[in-house]
Length: 141
Image (cartoon, rainbow, N blue to C red; front, side, top):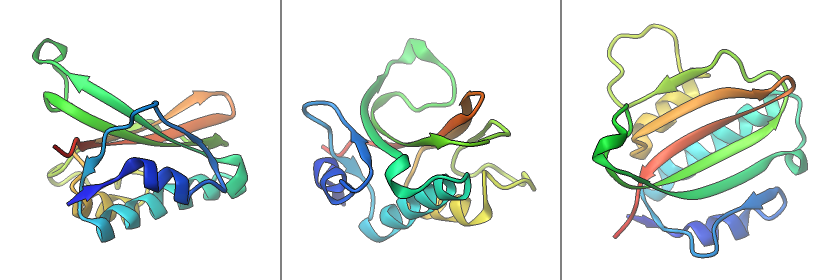
């Protein structure tokens, strides 16, 4: 199912939002996608932020074969929640992580990502008192 990124951003205008002039739509089932987004927002709130302190952003990303790494080759949409606080430890997630006993950020977020169709995610500390979680979805064609 196609999620219209521009509509998601408009619906979350109570937060800071960032997106390209022509954001791509992403491929995900709506209920699992919005559960994942809710868990991302909850993670930001648990770092001591208010809703209005958080930034929700979307980015169009093209990964080519020479890039390598864990991201799949092709067109992706990155959805990020960013805010103040301690976002460590830095971790990555991908579907079918195997039997890694440590959940990605939280078990609720990990379960939501697995159900949503996300293809990759990472959490990182971007400054001494700021961090983010970025989740990648396939672009809807």
